[in-house]
Length: 308
Image (cartoon, rainbow, N blue to C red; front, side, top):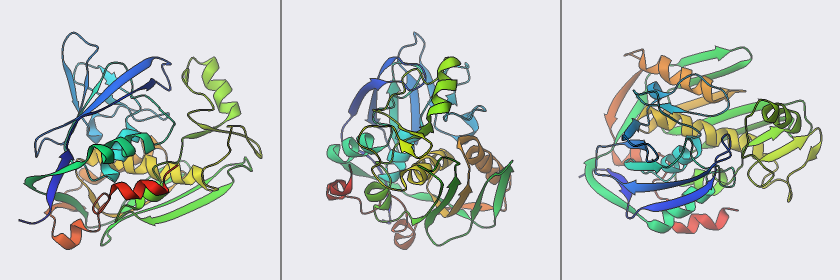
């Protein structure tokens, strides 16, 4: 049998503050049988609400990635745990959340990655499928853009530019195979400008945000204690977010994602455009060579030595 799907060996749990709600939230990530995919459920509701982690369950929004069930119940801020699942090569899992959003933890995907790798991964007797990009697909929203183009493996190329000198112009180009996400990207935290924080607070948003779970900048200054984990932490986090957003395609992608100033909504628009064209992609059963180029393949607990 060729490359197979993967799930966790055992459940893992997390507890923390929701970035936007400010509520204490607990989640559990549980193994699931092969072929199920990634699902979320709200355990704080009397009636079970189960939402598949798919691009077409995402309502419009810029601050984070939200999933909405058929009963309009939502789960917000799913991008970091989705990036961790994709980056560890986990294809089947159920995420139970007892509140309106996934906790922000330290603002990165590292706590999720660490727990997943410590719990261990289990191969399942089901073939691994991937979405192979056959022709270029792109979207624009003002000066933000994103596109997918054919490639042998899975690459992310991202560029950002901010007036604040603490960020400025940054670019990252990475082949995401062989544990690259775990080693170089998963510990990069969400970032924002102090002026944006003040505006969101006045609007009743980001109630759980703090210097402990975000990199906050003001001009040339980094206000968060301890400074940056990487000099280009901001663009690394954009790569993290892009991986989490692309994971809502329902399978790993074989192709190159190129983002310029793109956010959550632009990446979701890109997936919607991709899947509206039957000639732009195909679903393939991975060969060993193809699987070796995907995130998560070859990741071990030793890769955590590189993580903050």
